[in-house]
Image (tube, rainbow, N blue to C red; front, top):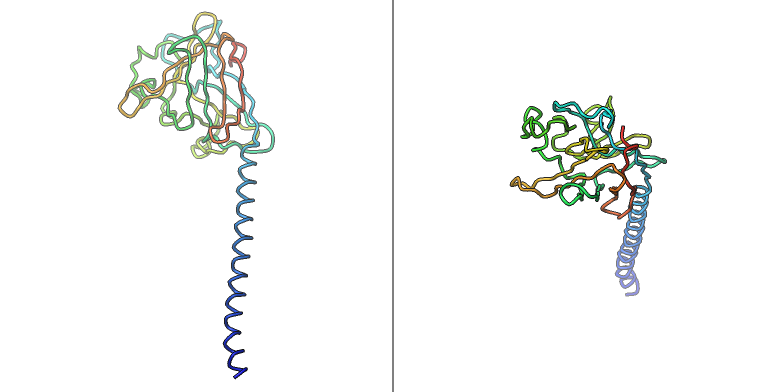
Length: 232
């Protein structure tokens, strides 16, 4: 009789031990995963950025812009510094000043360049007259807003969302033009039906403020005035 009771209890104890071990393993795995995610998030948020300047394709205020339509990736150029890559998919650039559209705008990685500010010959819908004496985007900028800056990139590299330390990226503007003794930089966005979602312009006269931040973490990478001597 005693042997029968012992043999009945042993399987139950074994099952309970297996259940306890399974729970412990699951808890350890869960804690490890949480720690890894926290570490990854912290690493992504620790990247640092410096403002390089306004890219005006080398056109100085002294010489002005030629009358014909000019193509170039005009916009705000930044560089990743430190040792951590930057994920640009969460970035937003905002600006405020005293010109055009209330002098304010906010564009993000997912805000493509407005097609009506890209020449019809470059995949957009803008007429040559609208773009005259302005630096506007080439066909390669269609469907993009923030891309790696410079030459020599493959298409895959240029549009990759991770920017490595020492690499630069540009927040593309719809246009850059000369306005009096400073530059005017216009930003826009359109809804799917073509109506205006965002429209604003700022000046490089020192009275406009630009801010680059991470929408996910709230981290501000750069905030400061835009001046003529920052253009190149």
